[in-house]
Length: 193
Image (cartoon, rainbow, N blue to C red; front, side, top):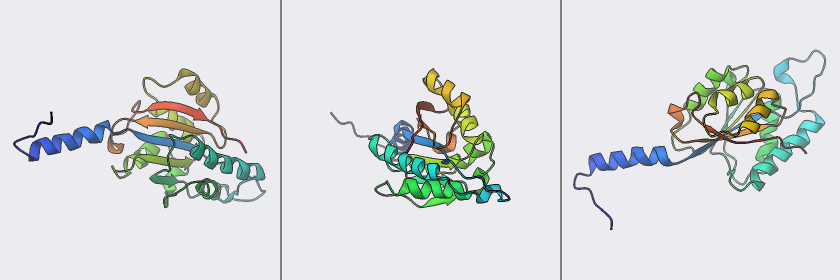
């Protein structure tokens, strides 16, 4: 039996708020793939190494092969060359890659600063991919991981968050309300090409 509300405005609003909270979101924190270290080159200009090219391609395959990791709705990326190249290679494997937002804050961000960037994501986005650097990725993953996160994966990412590693989180609430311990780590993956 379906109940109908007699006053439409309040119940409709309440249902919209309730459904907004119930729809799970997914956050993927990806560290860029392995980069080169050419002499005299500025850090932001460093390109991917040969191994990094293979690993970034593997990240794209993992996102496709693991059925519950759908194409992201939003991609937030550091403007560094190695993060941009990582995204370009990952995007080649996706069915419908979105436009990316290259945010200078992500390069060198603290965990709190990165969470603030994520909070700016539109509420309708269900999957957000962030491509950044260390130690930002591990610090942010550690900050967000709440109750129910697997201890072994948490220990692994705290010990080392290697290039091409990604922490996959479920976020129960809205992006705007994301905060410390506000997500559940599903898994920590390290794709290799």
